[in-house]
Image (cartoon, rainbow, N blue to C red; front, side, top):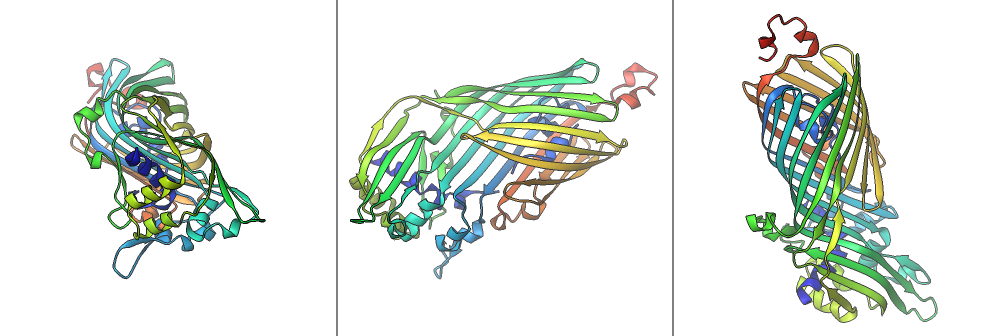
Length: 463
């Protein structure tokens, strides 16, 4: 009970320490690299330019920080240790603030053209981290509750930390001239999860007798190995101490998911729509449900501030707060949804070399919808080089300039893409950053229709 309760308590301070473990927003630029296998991650109807594609291990990471950057929050003290400086960022916070991180590791994938149908299969690892917290929570932890006398404030954070692997099988094909459809069926195998279900916590400080009370209906579900190492020792929430074993991949936590896409091409125009990651995972492997429900007297959260500064151990934090609140633990199976992603785009092919596109991206996760809009320009030099630039904006950043490039040498194809070129390698100074790396082995170049008309011998259609 105490171990899981400490996990619960540390999670309440998630907003104050998660960023130290983040590596690198949406995958937009890759969407317009049609003919490159990785573009099908945004729409399964997209097909590669080669008859056979073997995707070697690849990586994708995205970060979103609302209102402040990593370097605003984490400072280095005289001893050379990283510490949290909330005084520097509280004034920059909005009423609600989000930290969002997604990491995908693509272990393998394959696409094979069979007649006019493209068959695809593969496996990925995914880590989703999400935190939505009110400004008042940070103010309360850092400066106490005297500032809230005579007020009732909400301080409950919404937390989701989820690791899982995905085996998928899918395909795409033309159902009518110019109309392609595609889909992927996924078997989702959960590794570990930490997520809130009910997340209401309110603090009322009387202006008469200055007594403070907390009313709570807060439930935190968890399963799998999640550890907290402390802000001064490479802060991080790790799954099984960073080790993923075969037994973790093939656990009793499982679910299903689907990706759906369509593409319509007319002369120089192309239109596409897709829905990605529609699905959920049911967590059955030793689940824990920690419930903080009822009315409690508030005695201060100074111990959390001390723990963040390194003056109090996590164990002492757990002991102190466990004495103040009555947490009930149950072991019920629960389900958590994936972040649903939607792409709507159009492309105009000006010449065989240049194309221009526009895109609307939506993400529906944790009962909130986030949107991004983008404009793209793509160029292609024969079958060995394609490149592009992407301008995009969202509610957090009005200007982001991305870049993508695909290089082919022999059977190898290298893919590099980012939606925020300036901060791709300096995420500490950015509110959003992302980066994709991919490496493919390709064979059997497929000629375009205009090229195919000039081929006399049908056997030369593929080269």
